[in-house]
Structures are given as structure tokens and as C-alpha cells.
Length: 473
Image 1: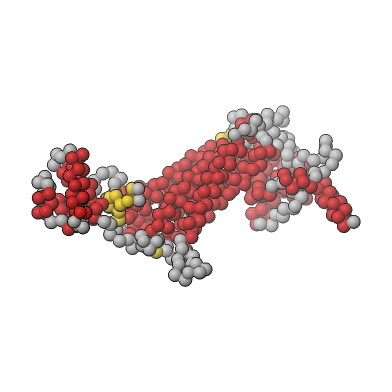
Image 2 (image 1 turned 90 degrees about the horizontal axis):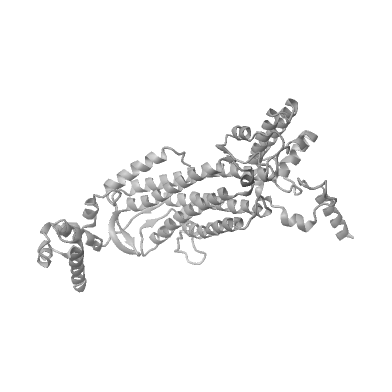
């Protein structure tokens, strides 16, 4: 008996559910299994975007005469009230709301009565959801750019703090050449600068209004898409109604930009993890940004960096998912596209959280790097011979033999005397022994963008100029 009562209650609730398609040709309410499977509440974070789009649409309807002045005033007053509720966090969703669009129309009906039914004039959920997602991504892109700019600032501040500290650069995880630690840190700043540029470029293609495209082919009503675009303050209006409602390349581009940024953060995280080990012992992070072990009291783990490295894998999955979602869709809108929002939101949230947490950990870093091996100056010795006209391949061979000889006698470059160097090969001069000092090696760099303190200063100035155009988080 109780089971029958619950079933009847469920039927009544589903019949009362706020959908934008039931009634009319449908004599029955949605089945419970259909409701559970098709309803996705993730789009609720686009509540303000949906209301802003509705305000623009209602304003346009009034200006073209599809709403009377009184109806326009009433509609806009109701929507502004809903917007205040959304911004204050007092807007209440019901479990019978099919999506954010139906929730807004349902709540507007509670405020305005029958007038709310005119809001959907000349509009489809197809162009409505495309607009909501574009408005959401415009905001997110702006926020992520600000966060990335803030992260670059942390890298610059750390580069300033470490001064002329010299470390080895690595190729194949073997010590290669001596470089300023600041130069190494700034390499990530340049990666993230390009990420900002990618997001900024993607924002241009996202800033296109699809309002007026309707379900797929436009409308016989005198809608003004250009007016809606102007009211929204968007950069462009769609050119093809089918493309406007059926394409999600702008969403995929956002996920791609997020994923590439996560890959850069993951590379940095890998190095921070290595540098924090006792084997490297390059860096210590604040206790506030590290975790301990439940079993080993001595442990201090760089878990934020490990999680960023792991979360980068999930955004790669998002990129694969958003690409696969589009690959076989016929024109125009298909319900498959409901899945795009969860993918986009996950990539967005992952990047936002990673920038915040990793930026905090990096900002707390105290660097105490050991001196590099003096083997990192081998190329400098070869180049000393090149400056005297020795072909590089021959100079490479000479220094290689010198390295082998020293290793065989358990010695390094720093053990060489000027006399021994000249005796080994008469084309060396006594002063060449000075270049085996990694600090001297760094000071001798003259090439653009190379690992010298002059280059570091120029890079910081250039990055400062770039960041001046962005609001940092």
C-alpha cells in the first residue's frame, strides 16, 4: 500500500515538474526513469548567466514590439528580482526543475504570473543554453587569466628572491649547463604567459551571441539578433543559426586551454616534488602547504604538487571527452550536448583549484640549492677553443678527452691548474681555467634569452610589462 502511495506521489510530482516541453502533445508526465536519467543539475551554476540572457532577450522583445511597454517593464522587473536572488544566494531550486532554464521560468511565473509565459517568445532552449555556456565561459576565462597572471607574479617574486643563485640545468635528467635558478623559474612564467594568450584568443571566439538562432533555423518573428548582442555587450553575432546552436568548438577550446595550462603546472609540480626530496634538497615549503604521514613522523609531503600532477591527467580526459562528444553529431542540437557542461565545469574547477593551491605552495618556498657540479662548464671550455678558431667538433673532442682523463684519476675541472690545462692541449691558455667555475660560466653568457643574470633582468622587465595589461588574482 505504501509503495503504491509513493508511486502515486512520484507521478504527481513528475506531472508537476517544470519542463519546457510537457503538455500539448504529451498526455503523460515523464516516467521516473526518464526523469532520473535526463535531468542534470550541474547547469545550475549558470543561473546568473541564464537570467542575464533572459533580460537581454526580454529587452529586445520589447524594443521590436513583441512585448508591450507594460509587459516589458513587468518582465524586466521580475527578471531583475530573480537576478538579485541569484546573486544573494536566495534563489531556490526545486527537485522538479528540469534544468536552470525551466527553474528561471518557473520562478518568474511565481513572481509575475501568466506574463512569464511570454519570456520564451522567439527563443529555444537550444540557443538559450549555447548563450548561457558562452556567458559562463567568458567569465571563467577572465577569472583564469587573472589567476594565471597572479601565478606568474609568484614566479617573478621567487626569481627576484633567489637572486644570482646558480644551479645546473638538466637534459635527460643529467646536469647540463649552469644557469641562474631565476632563469629556471622564469621558464614556467613564459609557458604561463602563452597560456594567458591562448585563453585571451579563445575569449574572442567565445564572445559570440547565439540569441535569435532559435531551435535551428531562426524565426518568423521580427527578432533582432544584433540588438540582443549589443544589449549583452558581446563582441559578435552568429552568422549561421545551425552552427550557433549545434557547435561546441568554443567549449572544446576552453577545455584545451585549461588542459595545456594544467600540463604546464604538472611539469612544474614534478620538479617541485623532486626538488623537495632529500636527494635534491633544493627547496623547503611552508608547513601550511604540506602534509604529513599517518605512520612516519618524519615525513613532510608536497601533496599539492602531487595532486596537481594527478589532476592534469583528469583534464586530459576532459579534452578527450569534449572532442569525442562532438565527433559524430548530425546538425544541429542533440541531447548528447547536455554532457558538455560537466566536462567544461570539471576542467574549469580543476584549473582554478590547482592555480590557487600550487601558487600558495610555491609562494611559501625557501630555496637552498647546492652548487652544481663543475662538469656543467664543459661546453664553456669547448667554446673557449672555438673563440680561437678551433672547429667546434674538434673542441668537443678535446674537452671530452679531458673529462675522461680527469674521471680516470678521480678528479674534476676544479682540480685543474692553469699549467695542467695548457699542458693537456696547447691551444688552451692559463686564463681558461677560470671558466670551469659555474658562476663565471653564467656571467659569460651573451645570447638573447640565455641563462645569464642580464637575461633574467630583461625577462622580468618584459613579463612585468605583459602583466601590466592584466588584473592579477
